[in-house]
Length: 312
Length: 273
Image (cartoon, rainbow over all chains, first blue to last red; front, side):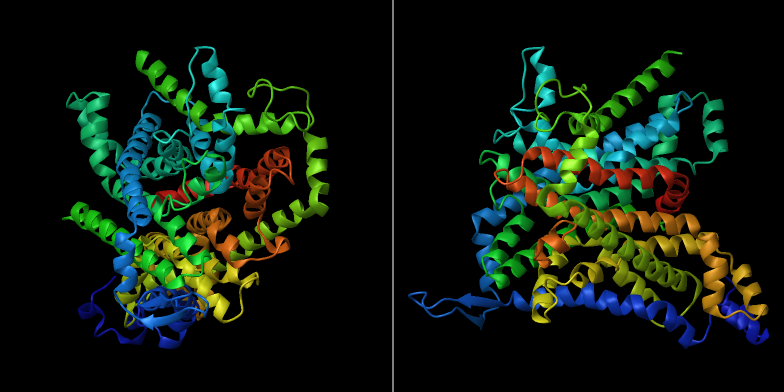
């Protein structure tokens, strides 16, 4: 795009070339989205933030209907004292710390394998790994619930031959049973983003490394991986957000989890419980806390990895 | 040679992991009705797929196909409108300079960073205030807004639509909308298909929103309906959930296979330099 200095003396047509189009025509492009964006994104956040500042007060006997009082800290301090909510936050944190790196390492590894010279039938493998993404989250959870249920589990059926079995719903395993569903669903998606990015690594760079005597491993690690950094940042941030949203999988598994998954298992589930119980301000406060935490974590990660890199 | 065997072996192993549950689902859906969970989960036991689908079609007054139609409408319409809005906004952000451009893009990027599921609860409250709860619009309206779509469209418009083309259109006397509609969209096609598919899948995937804002059975998408069936084992046999799950994922898989040429090149744009 030319700078203002070069267009200054060149008459009206060239000025328009710099993007100076009438306000009216730009408005046609932007206004419909912006209006809906304000209504469906900004308004709900402000609404929730506002709601969360009011506390629900019930009269002593609980006979009169509860009243709302402005009490800005009440819901927030309650959330941090609420063991179920903080427990859910902690659980999601542990989940993310383990699941996100495992999934992305898997995605990166598969992308590098697929990108290597030795790979055969690439389009077939690419499609196979991407298919789970096309399966809706709750459908994936339903299918995996059949994989996990003791009576039907084909996994344990296979393991039975080895006299082994996995108790997918035992309290210490169940979180990782959930993690497996998420990993299954999203590895291929992330792999494809990384793989697409690998395609743009210039062939000359790889050839030069090869001439310098670098082996396949060395090229993958020292040449290819640094060049897909922005794709890795993108997928990591999406995965962090995904972990915070954990809802579908535990919700579907809950009824058959033999009590290992409580109704407040994750922060979103906990907010949902408060909302269906009629305590909207408390549910809103939980949503706000989660939004702030996720936003902060994503932003910190973004800033840390972005240094000196403007490609995102 | 050894590396070829190792690479293919590892890729094959990953394919087994990704396809295993889908294979099980396919096999289970073909088993005689009621025997979905018996016998070898990984091999056929007669082929009753069509009679199973017939039973699925008449269960509960044939509501399954109603659910499929609802899903298709929510996702198809939502993704179509969403892609149009996103691509217009992304194109404007990439090609025009206007006051507030950076602020708007920053805001949209910030919205990408927030879990969408967080908006659901306040949306539910707002919709119940204005009497939209139970109305299909309560699912459609939030679905058409895709900040990530705008982001993708902006990246792609900047890369794929040269300023010269826009300028040439103007010299020919075409209006901005026409330039966008006839020239730019053609160049942005892979990105548009990608945005459409992402949007389609994310609406199809969104379970919380429709389960909260829709009351009656007849307006639900298929995911909400199936989870409802699954939760009521007493009323609806689990076999219906298995067959229904299988049938419900076929359209998406077909769409992905058919459109893979497009979304693959579109994803390259999303993955950036």
